[in-house]
Length: 304
Image 1 (cartoon, one colour):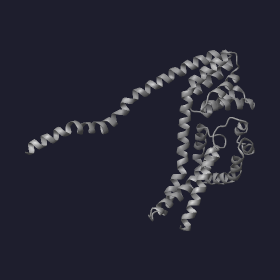
Image 2: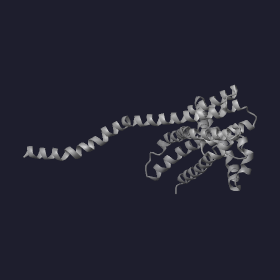
Image 3: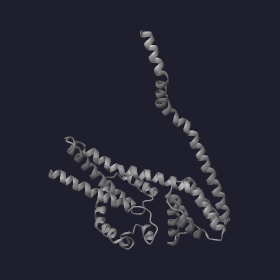
Image 4: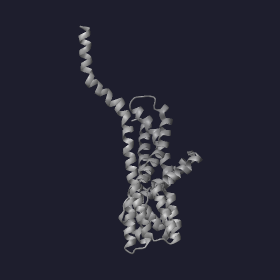
């Protein structure tokens, strides 16, 4: 094997290892390290919260992640950094998600610039080096697309789970629980993104934030209009002293109505979305099956 190919294979293997570790270390956690994760202070807790092999891997690969992160920051335009931070927040990657994304972008660029020439060289083509730069650019931009898509999926997951979650909050408050205790029940009972957000809301209150400030930060971390209006209703009810249970019940009914309206709107859009596939794909095939034999018979008769 050519030494250049061997170096390329080792580079690709190491880059894939760093990429997998970087992706696995991102995300919102529920556990002893969650308080420190709010401020990004997770390095001291990795050994306590992880298995021995995971802690060893984190210690060995953390310097590489920091170095790749600095490289990714250097080659990212300054105007793009704030958009990346917002996408990381919406995707729920945690406090260290932004630095992990920068490292993943640098690793992706290295993989793209190495993997494309390697594959083309092994295939017997000599154009590999010419495509190294486009491959690097593609690898550098692909993580941004992945994070933005993950953020959209997470917001949709929150929107779907919101009505049932508000119902659970209303039942808990009517049973005599306080609002914080109700949110704790939700964080323990509701899986997924909305449960994570409720857990983080509780952690911020335990760290000393007021209820109003914690709810405002919840609005800032998401782009779900229904959740934003629900948090605003809780802020206003807390300010004027309205019964929390009544506010929760009215918001739950409103969320279910909005979800039904969204389903009807989606159903009303289906005929328009089906028009072009039917016009350009189904109708031509149908015309060939129905009219084709008759057309062949007519052509045969007239030609005879």
